Image (cartoon, chains in turn green, orange):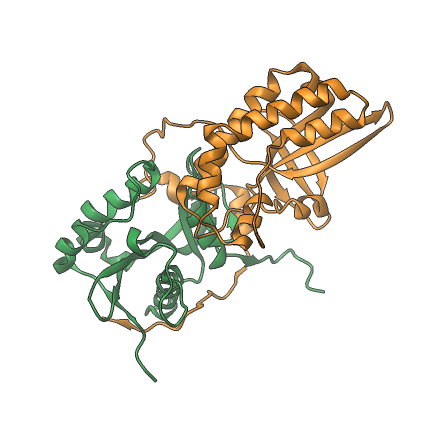
Length: 183
Length: 212
């Protein structure tokens, strides 16, 4: 079987330069600029922060196999939701997922969308973590970012939790309710 | 040309409604306003952006669903057209009294109904099949109910997809990347109920190998 047109690898401190020029935003769209700015200037520090090691932060880079071009960036880490009465729920926060502008809406020769390759890499990575991550994944998405909302839903982030801010949605993977009828 | 799509202003629906009620003069005036809107810059921009979409995606947009690969400019263009249409519509007493419109966000989804909460207002229950038909049957979706009064005891209610046209330019201090921001990880009782179930298996649509 031939190798795919892409490769996914974990990122680290040596990738600071690579990320510093990552171009994923339309300059006229503020919520896209916010994501690009985070990836360019903060993501490496986020992934390598000594105090966060226990949260198992993961940085994933999606590259074109033939050229080494960076077409996608994603990151996730372990978190714990805190309820008002002290209840806790383990989860994985999808910190960021972005496709380079030149590759947005594109497919590889074999038909896979660039966004599917990146999101599948995130989900595969979450599934493979040792010790195991909770398979409860959530992301925070700007309410006007329809493309990301659609992509999240495609990957099972169907449920909307309470909003952390008026302009953002908190989407989480679906759960089988313990109160739901199983007939 | 086969597969070609023509976009019309929703004011044409209002015009048809007026004509149905026998108000032909007003119907003609609203139809003219629709033509003006369709010839305006907002419609031109929307047409331009949609011309790059596939026929399927374009139909999705018309049905109120944003394709996941749609350009970000599409949402802005839709809002611009909606704002322009609403400006004209609300300035016309004939139209505002013609049909009552209730717009809100879906707050709860139940087996047979959804709960629609108006911004700063009361909630109302809507049959779930109506929300499904409008492709707005998930929590957070924006839905509008257009109520056409037939007489004092009867009305026709149409559920249509809605979009948020507000200009929330002030984004505040919140950052989705704030690791120490308690708003990101604090949850409500409703969230706890949601999270209490067993998480569904993660979706992996493309087999991927990750190199360390």
